[in-house]
Length: 359
Image (cartoon, rainbow, N blue to C red; front, side, top):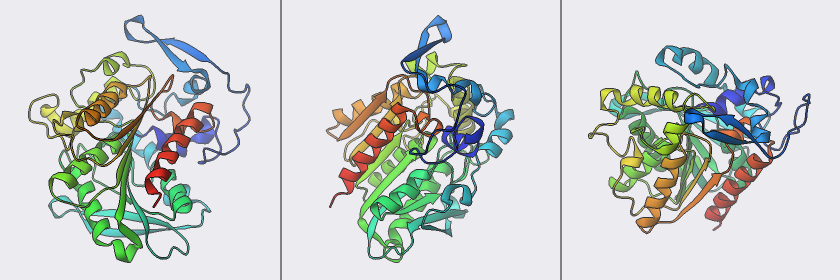
């Protein structure tokens, strides 16, 4: 979902002044508290948020898609669309668009982000934006791509896949796969080492990244060195404990999640005919996947499906690093980048990537 992009676009309205997690915190009436703050959830269960995160929740009202219906989608699409300059700013990177062929011959855009003066061949990181597969654009939540281009001399490619409900499944994941194949095919001209490709996605983009990885494996497509999935949206069935708990609370709740999956799958949602490439939690074969990183908040809809996915990777003999961040709601690391838990989350993510890319 588009929490990260909404926060990036409207950070000044929720007490932040920079896209960087290392930025100084804007002046507020009170400093971040410490500890936990409890709120009432469904069935009167106490939801225990980290207090540094809970402190900004009131300011997010109206800007995050809690209880979202399809009628709300135009407004949230407008809020979650990020302009190129808002992402790149004055960072010493170039961001160049390419028009490529997506699923069924449709035209889509990809943007290539790399630092000025990039030479030789660096790792390639394929990036898929969040937005519940129904909103956001290729620049939404993509500050990591800029950071990785500078830190690792990586070439990052971010894809403008087509959104549901106008383009229901499998269009989104097939567009993403087409973009990955284009990136691998153009590796030499882009300055990418084709043996060092990593896929990254958060939320809806995390689900699409996992699905794209399945397609690459099953079709003999581009080899991936790793997949990095942040709070991935991977299960359409709406039957985990965490999805039932977080209805009407937090940032992206059960209602919004059902709305998005209905847009993606229509009356197939929750049925027997859903492809694992669209809803990766459906997969029964998790063998031969690249090393995987998964993180998720303990207080969000996607918690249980993310944990189950990691468990199933381990059961299949794969490698997966899992982090469940206690007291965190969805997208916390982008919404409140200066919070201690957010800094720890991003440090863990970046440390895993640095180890993966060490050659």
